[in-house]
Amino acid sequence: DIDMTQSPVTLSVSPGDRAVLSCRAGHSVGSNLAWYQQKPGQPPRLLIYGVSTRAAGVPARFSGSGSGTEFTLIISSLQSEDFALYFCHQYNFWPQSFGPGTRLDLK
Amino acid sequence: QVQLAESGGGMVQPGKSLTLSCTASGFAMRNHVMHWIRQAPGKGLEWVAAVWFDGSNKFYGDSVKGRFAIARDNVKSTVSLVMSGLRVNDTAMYFCARQLTTVNRHLDYWGQGVLVTVSS
Image (cartoon, each protein chain N blue to C red):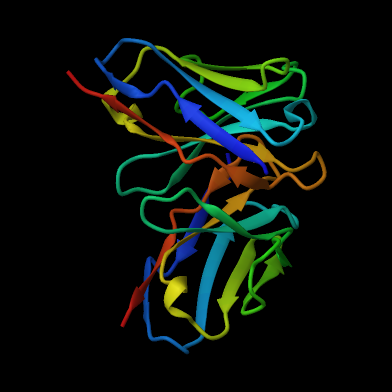
């Protein structure tokens, strides 16, 4: 099974800041990596798939990069609606797996 | 529009069984691999199971293998999760999700989820 880790666990930032979230896979997952955003009481929302492709309707301030085992989600200028939980997801191998999440908190 | 609606949740005693259902609408479910993912209260996401287009292949997470069974009915556009031998740590919100394609295997639509509580 592929273990996924994320760092930091919590990131305290201010509106307008740049946020950098990291995800690491225990084995290369190629480009089969997605990012999801989750707000309280809601299901996850797809943000990024294939490492760097934004899903429909996702603002351009969200960008993804990386390959193999190291991946990054960058939010270039945080808006109030971006404070949420973020999960990475590898879908290269069965069983699929998610990272434990990074919480973006208001500083 | 694409919609996924889970049902069947509730409170159940340890060791008992429960069946969850996900009803798809707004798209041809037969063209998509379907997944179940769960989230324990205050915790992260855990991938649970997936079923191939025609039900011919099924995949399970290690923590549910041998206890849970996923199935689908493409005529009714439903996906089910039969959960047996339930444990307290199976308590979670269970989400149904759609895989986009066999090439782009990310999960592009999710249901609102259904809560399962396992407690004596």
